[in-house]
Amino acid sequence: MSLLEGVLGEVLKGVLNGNVNQQQQSQLPDVFGNILKNTDLGSIGGLLKQLQEGGLEKQIGSWLGNGQNLPVSPTQIKEALGNEQVKQIAKQLGLPVDEALKKMSEFFPEAVNQASPTGELGTAHKAESRGRG
Image (cartoon, rainbow, N blue to C red; front, side, top):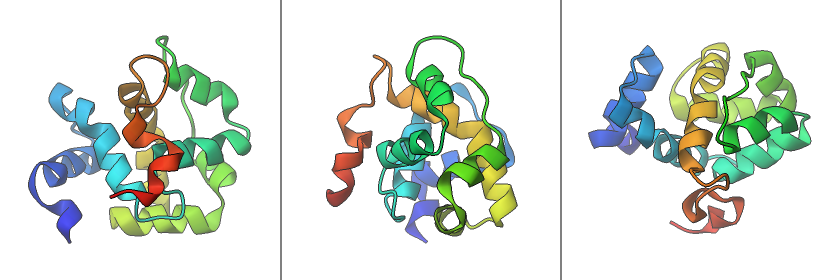
């Protein structure tokens, strides 16, 4: 699987094992972007839109802003996304659904934070970029 090759693979392994160093942390948006481009969500922006529609506006606002990131639980992510989206993400991660949800709740807030240094998502991660690539 090409996703698990090279630098991306190393970052993903670190994320899956819970060992993410500073350099890898800055690569989290690209890791999640590559995972999401193979789902119906298409991008970090697409995932954020779905989470926002699912009632997580407050958390998303904290992730995009410069303050502390509010936590999100695996249950909140599952409820906001629905079973089909969660299954797609888990498949891309190569993990069982529960484990994928746990990793998403742990690392996605920081990925969004890294992808939005000015408080807005960079162009590469916005929802409308899905058709590119």
